Amino acid sequence: MNNTRIDLLLSYIKENPNDPFNHYALAMEYVLIEPAKALELLNMLIKEHEDYVPTYYQLAKLHEAEQNFSIALKTYEKGLGVAMYLKDHKAYSELQRAYHTLAESLED
Image 1: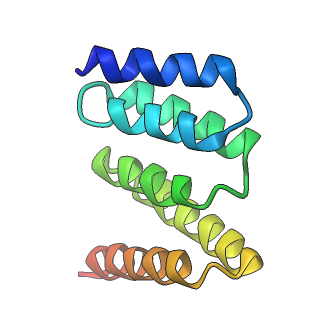
Image 2: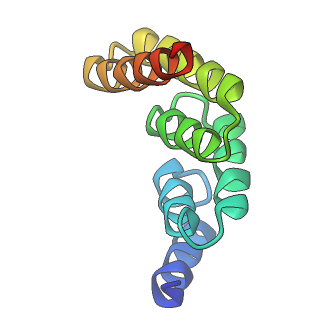
């Protein structure tokens, strides 16, 4: 765990708690070392910043890693809706690809 980076992100969050990127970056620091903490942070981020599209991809990937496939698919679907609403074509494409890859793997 990179405590220096985590401490820095926590200070950024304290300075500007409404910036979703800092919360997202903090969650990404925890993905490999403490997935439950990352999951908690990403779920909070979706509740507080529903339109922060990158969250949906990472949250769905965490659900996939934990073999919560139906939750992962629902998370991708929600992200697809948000990306479409925001006209974020790149994020929409990435979410759609990940959704279809998972859905197809579950069909096999």
